Amino acid sequence: SVMINQYYKYLIPFGIYLSIIKNKRFQEDADHYIRLVVKLIQFQIVFTLVKIAVIGFRENIIGSVATTGGAVSVTYAMMGAILYWKLRGEKLIGNEWLVFFSFLIIPIGSNKRAIWLIFPMLVGLLLMKNVTKRSLKNISMIILIIPILIYFGFRFNPSFNPERVFWGSFDPEYAVNWMINYSTGANRTNSTLGYGRIGTAEVIIGNIKEDPWSHSSLFGHGGSNIDEENIDPRSIGIAGGTVAGFAQDLVIFGWPTTIVFFLWSLSVIWVIRDKHNRATMLILLLWNYFFYTGGFLRSPANSFLYFIVIAYLKEKSKQSGFVFDQLLQINNLHQNSNGVKRERIEFKNATI
Image (tube, rainbow, N blue to C red):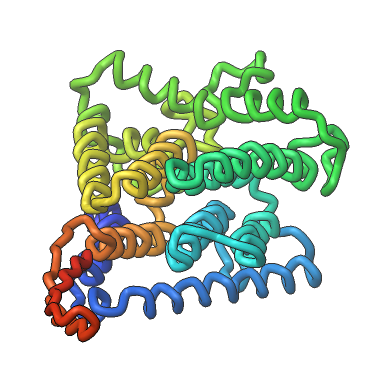
């Protein structure tokens, strides 16, 4: 039962992913099902606005979903934006940009800081898709949009401004120093415990390096989370709190299982034939697993949506012209003016 408790949150979302990509209805009309998913995410935007109006900014309520952490709101925003962008043919015009950026409301309502770092990068990655076709336009949009997002992010989130309020002053130096201290615990000179996602990862990797063949290094400590109920963080030299996804897996499962698990997660992404979209999902996975919570893989609430996006991108890349056939259509055109019968051969690209 302990083993089932450890692995269920990984196996169930992946099982659903397999059932989706093998489903003939999804293969025939993927857009229909993805529109439904996007609508459900957009409902969370409405619920988030209601939440802000009634109880204010709260991390433990994501739209209509109650949760112990707000990381799922970041996943909702990112995956919702990707799905909408793909549904619109990978090109956004006019009011479609407003819809695209409206997904940010969900993590804003939960005061999530990470979204202001990863979302600008996501926008840049998506706009780079067509940079060879419309280079000047896309490059100019990237140069314009990304700084604007960072500006609003530093003012919207209380952690990123000296006043620590919503819509505080814009102080990049303060924001960067705060992020460094939060991630590494650099300002905690009196503590010998690892702190922050980078600080705790350094300690955990250091523990494994000291004795890589010990039982705990090879097979982990068990449990499902690093907390007082499962694994006491102080017993492994960290202060608890925020721990990167891969570092949590190293503690729980050991380094061999963590490596195998990560390689498996890469193989899932490789089913996307479109190289740009595959690279985009790879970059997001690396960030999520090594520098954030690892929720794409470790939390069912996040991974369900993550795997749906991969399944959709896989299906669309299969349909979007990676295999081209030329169909020959011969139309007999009778030209009475010169009395000569001409044949016009038309070649058309067919998608499968």
